[in-house]
Image 1 (cartoon, rainbow, N blue to C red):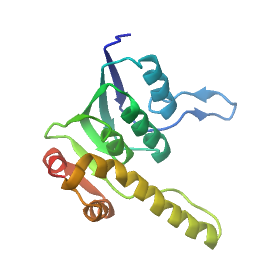
Image 2: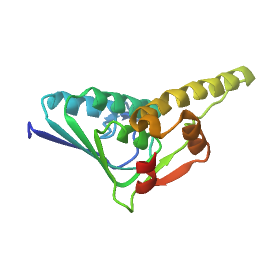
Image 3: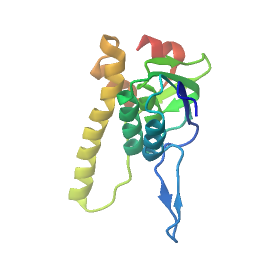
Length: 171
């Protein structure tokens, strides 16, 4: 336990803890709960290094991870070691500094979910997704400042856009 620096990894799908048929809990190393526990154990850390290589995952888990990291007082350096896609790219926005080699990529897109039900439930699911997308965009817009408009971000997400390190700096 190094009180000065905490290293965290998102090297798989961002996912919550899960339970099997028999009630056995499988703890996820990329859950909001895992991050809460690690950040609590290291609440006095001065530096956090977050290493990301992830295709994304749960918007609910990832949003909580992003907000927990933003609240922590440590200087946060995000290293995009390979890919930061979908919600993993949102989590990356929590960094005070983002280091991204030239061969690494980020991908942004509109959030999606599974839905079933009658026509009213499906219409509601679409409306819910519009709100969830709008909330998710706030992390990018806050990070980008005046370099990125909400309209341009929506266009990038609509196009399921892969971004190079140079393009990330541009936006």
